[in-house]
Image (cartoon, rainbow, N blue to C red; front, side, top):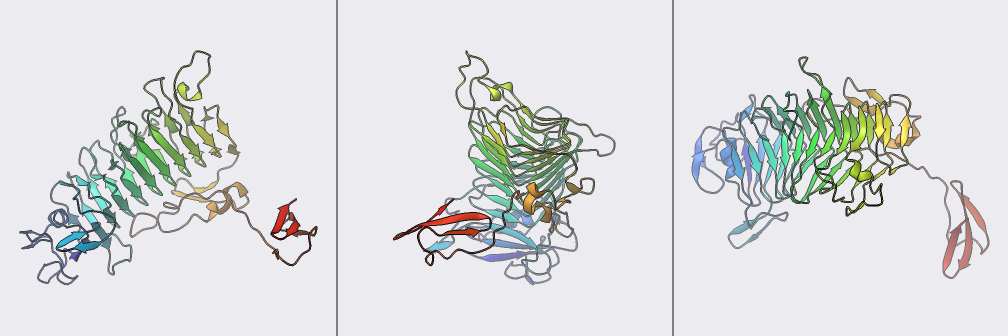
Length: 436
């Protein structure tokens, strides 16, 4: 396994061996696999061997990606770095930084009209801003259990989603912004498109779509699985007067055939916050929706009537309807259509510090149902700037306990109260206390 460096501002011999001698994007040198070539960012990434790490320094100018790439998995890729004879094993990592590695300042990579399909198994892309994306599909696609984390993906034009997730890919702690006026049918021009035939994960992201794009679009691809947790999904923002209200927060294309978990998300301004669509009424896959805050939506949770079935004696569809629990609703024209909506909370006042300024911190500490959510302020996903509350999963309830209980000192029959709960000792051997 080797560590390489990339910097457009490097002035050394451009062999990638150190920050001073980083690949400079223009020199013809020996690439990581031993071949000779121009050390553009795309070429260096393409030739990384299993276990190699590439550290990309922020340059004084944006870094051109130069060309499209599909980076296929290799048999030696995996989560563990080791060497067997002359063969290296491990995961490929491409991580950006500013002045010092690990400072979480992001270099800017100009994707232009190109796409990067990162299929290196267990690979990692971290801490990079992908800007000026114009490719008609997804400029970034993650697959083969690879992860993109703490990155920004910003579309400039074109009809594609910002990120595609397939084959068990993960998108975590990213900021994704798509301001493009979308095709209003199909799965185009949204924030994230999930079409995985394995378990895909979208977690702790800030997803923003304008002019009617869906935040997260989950396509049917066989019976695939998706976990959508801890995200802030902010849709239907108006860009240049072209805004409209057709964008959904999470759109599940065929919820009867997709196994999904949608929880702990904040969804704002959606046409439908969580849309459980279905192309047929013959199948229901058990799924779960829970602990989301849905605010300012036309409909908070809506979808196929099939997911409230059986509602008549002749219903022969297989599977069970989804469960929906502990969701929080504020100022929606309609809340949940699901008959199985358990323990909902309906707020009567705006819980957020400032929706307009994209600060989704909880402003009222007296709203106890939010627990620690009121502490949602930390650096966001935009690298050199701060987006309040952009990347923290929702934690709803908190319990504070005080007092102590000595398990051995009391006699059988004694009652002790700790934090308002009473305990009675019922046995010395073995020691047993019972809650009363």
